[in-house]
Amino acid sequence: MRKSASLVLLATTGLSLVPASAAAKPKDWQRVSDIGAAVLVIGSLGLPVAKRDTNGLIQAAESLALTSLVTEGLKQAFPKTRPDGSDRKSFPSGHTSRAFTSAATIYRRYGPAYGVPAFAMASLVGVARVKGKKHFWVDVLAGAVIGTSAGFLVTRKRGNDQRAVLIPWGDTKSAGLTFAMRF
Image (tube, rainbow, N blue to C red; front, side, top):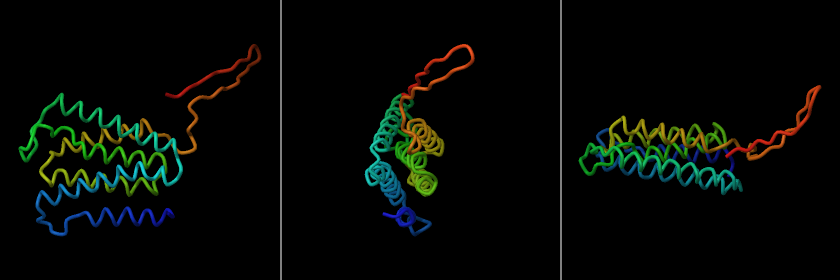
């Protein structure tokens, strides 16, 4: 698929998720956040598959795993009642953290042409979690920080996948090799 066609598809998918009525019910917003987060997660894993980018797929999966681990750990450590009172797993927002991880991974790996629309959709997911009465703004902001951090920490730009490098060096008195490895 051409880049411009991908952007149009992503943008129109995001726009079609927004409830038409300003007085939309919380369930409508919850559906928006469910679909938006799922589209971003599938996109962050599917884009590398479509581009035959094995390292990108691995990095996206690692980013999502790290985000899930941190998010679920914080939910257990800081039980906070949701605005709708349904349970005590409000902090941080899992939908938002996964959406922002996916957006950050897409942005970091494939650049702003793919990443900016992904971040716009991730922002929509965060707003929808608040409008859907599932989270407070602080929950969404924490999820966005966790997700963006994990995506940028784990993902490298495409073409910069070297994990180990051997660098020869020398000066007037000695010479040698330096080995560097990225984990």
